[in-house]
Length: 247
Image (tube, rainbow, N blue to C red; front, side, top):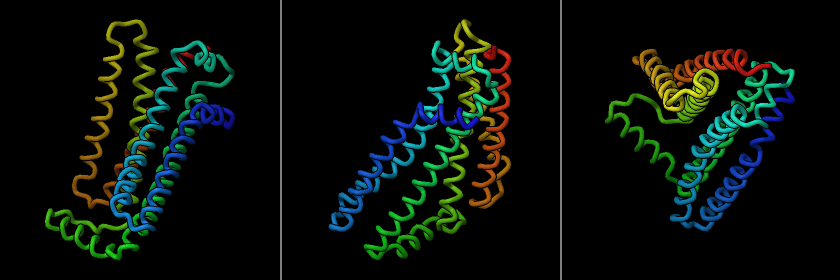
């Protein structure tokens, strides 16, 4: 399993390195502009870092989906399924590598965001005023929650688990299109419809289960449900791969 994880990481490490280098450049621009009191550049850097955090995490998952598709539809990738490793292990290596990448990236950007926000508002001395303003605004909108790091942590965990569940659903849809619907008309559209329906089902279940909960417990329940569905999607995908791709 360790070798499979390393193999998957080697196929995607260059993209992760590019994201890290761009992040380092934007963070350096943020710190320099903050030190020089260039408010416009500081704001622009902060916005770019925010988009980079979400975009980087999303792209890690998308690249994993594209790699999975390539492995099942090219001769070089298909050779992977002719090795002594079972499809459960092969898919497990992909899932573990992608899951670790998503969560490590999420933890990295979360910590970086907390530090940057602390530096930003600590430098201008307006952090307390901003937090009070946003909290009052949320109360006026009847959103009963306290705006602090615990809320953002719960939101981050929910987002990461939800994105992993979406990636796993894409795995399943791709395997269905490749294994069960190969050569059939509109197989891609059918797989896309399956992907949409499963994600809609997960979202609907999350909404039902967390309807009367406060924000932080709701986010963690969303995360737990997403992880549960990720496990189900893994088992279903591995089973199809084992029946149709293993030699």
